[in-house]
Amino acid sequence: MDKAREAKMNAYAPYSGFSVGAAVLGKSGAVYTGCNVESASYGATNCAERVALQKAISEGEREFLAIAIAADKDATMPCGICRQVISELAPNAKILIKNENGFQVFTVEALLPYAFGSKDLT
Image 1: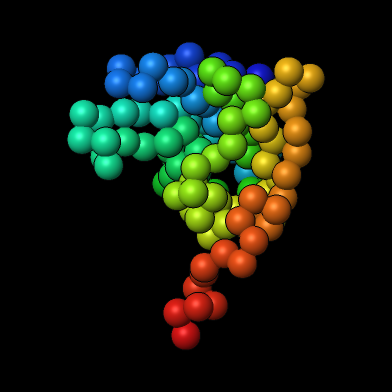
Image 2: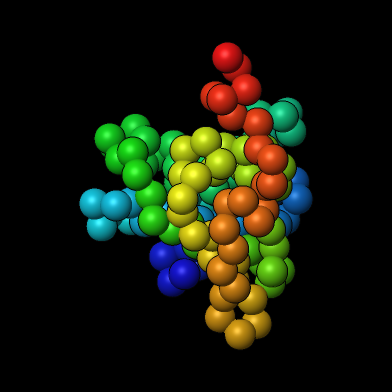
C-alpha cells in the first residue's frame, strides 16, 4: 500500500483533479507501480491499475499476487475497465483498497462476478 500511495504522487490529473496510484506485486516478488495519466481526450486516459499491470507485463511478469490501490478518496474501487483487465491479467490477485483503517482486501471474483474472458470467445 505504501508503494501505491507513493505512485499516487506522480499522477497526471489536470482535468479531474483526482489522483490514483497502484502497486502490483508479481509472483517474482517484484513490485510495479502506476498512476493515472489523463488526457484532454478522456477516452485516452489510463488508470493507475492498468498502467501498473501493463508495466509489469512489459517487463515479463505474468503472475500476480496482489494489487494495491490508493486514491485521493478512501475506499475508491477500480473502474469497470480496470476490473475487466485485472480479471484477465491477474485473476488470482488479491485487491487491496486503501481506506481510513489501512486497507480492505477483495478477490477479483467479488469485484467482477461472471467476468467476460477468453472462455467466452470459443
